[in-house]
Image (cartoon, rainbow, N blue to C red; front, side):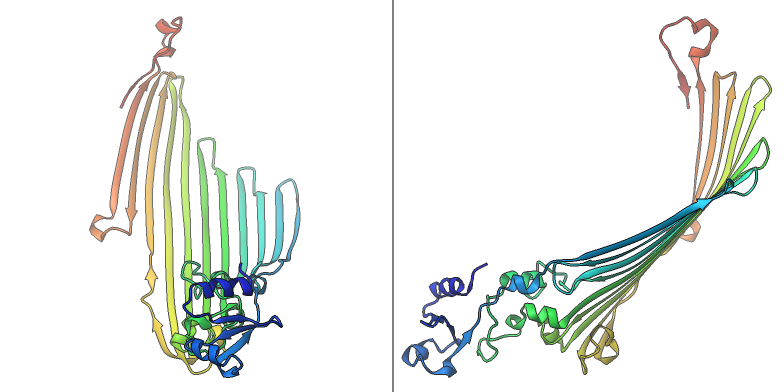
Length: 381
């Protein structure tokens, strides 16, 4: 970055009349726009200029970051049950001042042999996270879009407010972001899964698998009167509420038996269900009568704009069946059928059916090919 003298020399070189004057005592004078000729005639008139001080905006915006991470876990159990529980907490400061992340996580796993024929596995996890993204989000939007762009693009001094050329856009400096911008996100996540296996008898087994995720994300962004967007809207507050969830259930029954000395039979029937939900709400507040509530002051907005919520919900229900027959370990027959019903389609066109069948002949198992060095398998769908 240019220091104040380098910036003054560079800017003066592009102007017809200079506006920056370095004095013998080291002070830098900034001549107000339109007063260049008057200053040259009367350089000691204090109404024509302002003494400015160098600001290294990167030093004002960035700092050394300190992070803390704590974790603990416990595990144990018996011959028929085992458990594992862990938790951790993170407190991570960002390199941009006033940014950071705080997050707590909890996880639990349980494995249990409920009986000689039933075993159960469960997993639970949850997370709470708060992200302070004070840096702003639009790094491509020029100096008024994010503190990082302001630190790079802004002149290396605070522009005097009594300059006639002073506009709302060049009022936004690094201090504006630090003092009058808020970007907080609260995120909550919960996940669970279950796996149950039951050996009903020597022929039948049953499996239940279920799981789900829940996530909520609430974000608040406040632009106060020191920031370009806040000045233009008499305060600007944007909130978003995102809610997502999904869960699935799978039921499977397997049947296995021998067909005497001829072969084996394996059959599977099942049902699966999946549910997905998505809802996003966005609200914008403008023209505030009070600014002290900042990100919590939507009730003080003169104009509240509520966007049409975005909702995406759908369900999928499936039935499936499959039969495998093996005869003499040479002839293989497979038939399957799957039916899928989706709420994404119209009520009269929600179901699709997908049958399939195949026959295989393992020729290398035939006696008359036992001594043949090459192998050939013939499959006829």
